[in-house]
Image: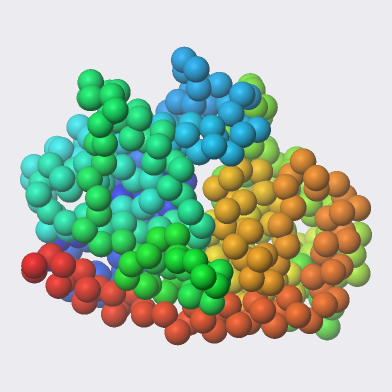
Length: 392
């Protein structure tokens, strides 16, 4: 069987489906990953074959046209979701020519894409093959589809219609224990155990061993950089601002704890100069997380799931609704705390860290969440479900 996986606009979307794609390859199936050009190194890094189908323009260019002014939408969650959905729909349209060329010579039997990988739905419908939706994170992402469907319909001259075919199967990575009592999972369907995947580095003993002091990991993801955006109101600036990471690290360093900062090397070099007692660098988070007492982050989908998988309490300083939805689900479960970035002064962040470290209930709930996650069907088991779907 041939399975085409589609990545989204960031490395986290590659890491999300890498375990399932790898399990499919290990089961003897052919797997390709269609992606934008800038994600190719990350697909290669997790051992999967990438096929670039579009060149990624800057987020700020794609997000700033017509009425889609980020400065006006970032403050309102509904409009924020609509804008992100429209942006992913534009990325889908920009990928269709490349996907068409690929599938003319390599026709898949099944297409798997993330919650906002609209190009996967479109190419699967065109080919007449099943589409499987693989979530990138937890929480209800349905609001994004409003903007996505709106953008795609207007681009096809069919405003008001729904251009997004429903998936033949929806995967659900949310541990059942995290679903509030009396409500359904935001992505009900075939349960799938979430397993960490990230780029690896040569390991040093301190990365996988724990000393006597409490250990706090601080990270704001893989895309943080020292480069500055021309407009601080863009999604690009919000996702990549290294000042945000340094502020979090400096606040964590006020506590009596060992501080480890997971960050790209260029950002880590400057951070080590400013905070010489802090370890900083590109550290495989799946290796480091089990040795931590707390993970402080931007609430990125991959980072939060790594912490949950390791059974480690987390403090998420959220900037975007996409992060807030997942972080709130985890904090409501009792495995962490969520603070909106507008309220995240140094004193409040320090107090939240101390609360999470000093109250055993948070660690207990985090371990319970990890155990629930571990009991879900493995990627290898779900590959059998994909085989059945394609055969049917």
